[in-house]
Every structure is written in structure tokens, then in C-alpha cells.
Amino acid sequence: MSRPSENDLRLLFVTQELDRSSTNLAVAHTWASELARQTEAVHVVAARVGEVDLPPNVSVYGLGREQGRSRGSAAIAFGAVSTRLILGRRTNAVLAHMVPAYAVALAPLTRIANTPLALWYASHGLTPMLRRANRMIDAALTASFDSYPVASERAFVLGHGIDTGRFQPPDERKPENGPVIGMAGRLTPLKGFEPGIEALAALRRGACPEARLRIAGEPFYPSDRAYVDELKSLADTLGVRNAVEFVGAVRGDAMAGFYGSLDVFVNWRAQPALDKTGLEALACATPLITNNNAYRGVLGEHSGDFLVGSSSDELAVGLSRLLGMPVDSRQAVVERLRASVLQEHGAPGLAVRLAGVCNALRKGARPEFPSVAEAEASL
Image 1 (spheres, helix red, strand yellow):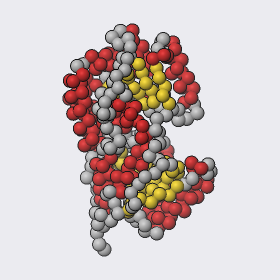
Image 2 (spheres, helix red, strand yellow):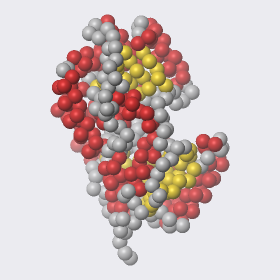
Image 3 (cartoon, helix red, strand yellow):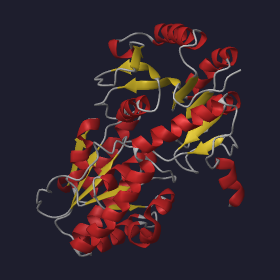
Image 4 (cartoon, one colour):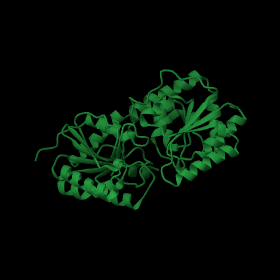
């Protein structure tokens, strides 16, 4: 039997949404475009399809959820198209993106076809479905050692894959009346926007009376709407409501403009994980401050300047210190960090690594990347 060729990879990529302008999942479109450069063909199955601009070797199969198709009807369509692609040998590797249920549903088909199945998952959510998927897949792929909640020998750390063509520094930064601090993400308690508002109040009472906070994002779950009201109430109580701007959802293709409008971006999490927002900000040459220890490797020797404790007081001190640095010195550091982010977390590089994993699995070989279990054992 002949060995698989490195350039005949035909990948089935399954994702919730394929839309270059998506506020939450524009990255899936970026990945599909970059994976097309590393494969013979990419077949994308997406629950929702929006604005798409992809190379000719990418085929898109929408399940119609954006048109109001029911979950049950979409599931039937998912089964039909997946069966046709996998059992029809039109694909020779499968990658499910962020949804363990996709991997569970596809596993019986991939077993019949002897096709490797991988799951990309970068979250703290250790659900029963993820546990089940972890037993059924050939490999789990994630961004950092703390982004996959199962200490598995088959969970490999590949870094992120941000759109380095989109996330670039602005040609010029428009002057503002006072420093502008930014935060972004789904407006949910896990993201921890309260410290940002509390730190803003402390700054305005002290070193930066003109400081403002700009928050991009929208609620995801219905329960999150009450959380947004709580944030606005907190800003009122602290007397900074007029200095806090909730800009709402920002299209994926407009986020670079958001980062470029800031003097500093705050990446804040209740639990550490290497999420994309801080990397995107650095790619736009916007200084980053964070309590997120997962960024220690990204920040390296500059962690002392950009990594702070998890209280709002510590955030305020860190912001004051960062904003007080000479602009030239601060930007020189940020440019070095930007170069590192582009090399280690750009979508072109990740696509090469994803294709490498799939080709290794097709050969029955272990992918040559560190595993989450190895990291756990070294602690």
C-alpha cells in the first residue's frame, strides 16, 4: 500500500460559522483560506454561512441555520453531506472546530473510512461531550497548554492562527483627548469586564483624569444581557459612565480598526487561557496589559511591564505605569512582541502545522508537537 503524499491532503473542516465578517468566528474563514494553500482541497461544512471569499479549491456546504433552518433539519443535512464526503473518499482527513459534538457525530464515519479525525478546542469547558469526543478522536489540537482541559497525550499544542493580513498597525493613530483603554470579547462574566471599569475609575481619580474605556462585544447567552446591565450600573456607581463606551458587536473585518484606535488593550480573564484578542492587539502594534498568565510565554522578558495581578487596583497601577512609559520605548517593545506574534501565532504558520498533523495521522505517526500531558507532567 502506498504512503500518503504530503500534497494530496483533502480536508473536511467542520465549523459553526463561515463568514469573513463574523463578530465571533471570522477566524474560521481565515483558516479555510490558509488551509487551501496547504492542501489539494478543503471541504467546509458550516452551520451558518455568510460573506465568503475563498480560493477555488475550497468547497462550502451550508446547513442553513442562518436562514432559520431548524436544528433537527440541519443535523440531517450535516449527516448527509458528511457521509457523502467521508465515505465517498472525497476527504482523507477531518478537522472539527471548537464543537466536540461534531467530532462525536463524525467518528463512526471516519472509523469506517479509516480517516483520521482531529478536534480543535481551545476553552476551559470540560463537558461530558468533550470527554466523550476525547476518547473518539485521533488527536486534539489547541492553542496553549492551558487551553485544553484534558491532560491527554493526544492533545497537541500548535499556537493560534490569527489573520496577519488583517491585523496590522494603522497607517496613523488619530489623536484623542486622553488615553483610550480597550477591552473586547463576548460580554459574559468569564471575561471579567468589571476590573476594567474599576481600574478606569482609579485612573481618573489619579494619574489619568481624561482616560476612557472602550468595550467591543455583545452578550452571547440571554443571561448575559443582565450582565451588561450590571456593568453599566457599576460604571454609574463609580461615576465613570460617561467615560465608558460600549461599542457593541464589531465585525471581524473591522476589529483591526478597533485595536488601532486604542492606546492600550486589556486582556482579562477569570481563568488563564491564550485567547486571540491579546494576540490580535499586539499584531496591530497596540500595547497589551493582562492578568492572563497564559501570555507569559508571549511577553517573555517584558512580562514585568505587561503582566499584572488579578485585582482592579493592580490593573490600575499597571495601566498607569504603561501609559507613563516614553512612547518610543513602549512602541519599540511592542514591535518586538508583534514580530513574535506574527511568527508563532499567524494563520499561515498554523495552517502549515494543522496540515502537518493531518498528514502525520494519515501515516499513523505521532505529530511532532508537544502534548498537554507532557506539560502537566513537567509542572
